[in-house]
Length: 327
Image (tube, rainbow, N blue to C red; front, top):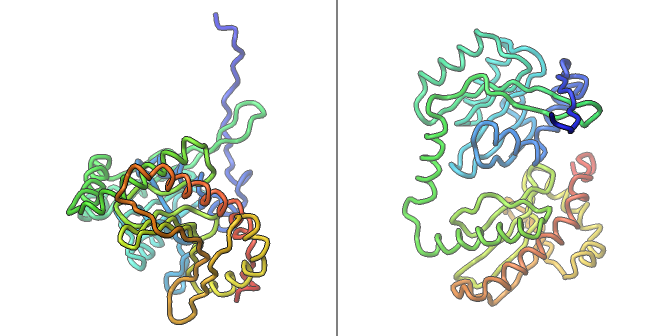
């Protein structure tokens, strides 16, 4: 007989004991990096990157819009803390059409047979570009432990796992140049180094491109690592887009001296109000030969250390930015 004392698993029946409202409580919780990762794992997508919360679609607002880096397509998430209803079914179709989403995820406390059948029917009649998921969210607790969420798939596309793997493979392997392969290898080694050192920065899946992103806790602002083979340079950026970027930039610039002291470098503060779509706060490392792989360890160390420094200096400040002051 086991001498280990076992706890009793208890289900929290009322989701609103934890999330009192879909828009103000559940959606912001789900949009956090660690929680959106749980959702991605539940449906078999390697990574989801949050693009926006409460995304405007005409007079309506979609809960969460994500990007799947593996297929470079949009993922729409619609949340419901009660049993599914016809209103939300209509919303997911309206939002998917307006945003051009290819993967649609409807999360609810409970799916009715009718709404499960509706998603199954949509998966049958739409072509292979579109995928409809129904997920039921649950909350569980053992004794006095922290409450833990769980996502159960109520319905999903046929052959979903095989289709995701094939789509990702096509995107990654089609017509890759030697430069593309080199950059993907570089980002792969950087990500492995970050994981080895247990950094708080979590970069996206390594892709054959000159940049890789990491979340900073707010939509339209992210941390970017850049590697340019021909220009022989590395860079760490805070990139900002959207209507409030100039206001957010100004708020961060007020702490310029303190931020640069924390990071240990002078930075380039590029507001870019001359028609450019992004503002940047940038650190560069010049005269870097990425074709010489024997030098990669020192380049990757530079990347990791400065990504950590940027994340430490900016993540809290970015979360604390005031929209009212930015307008």
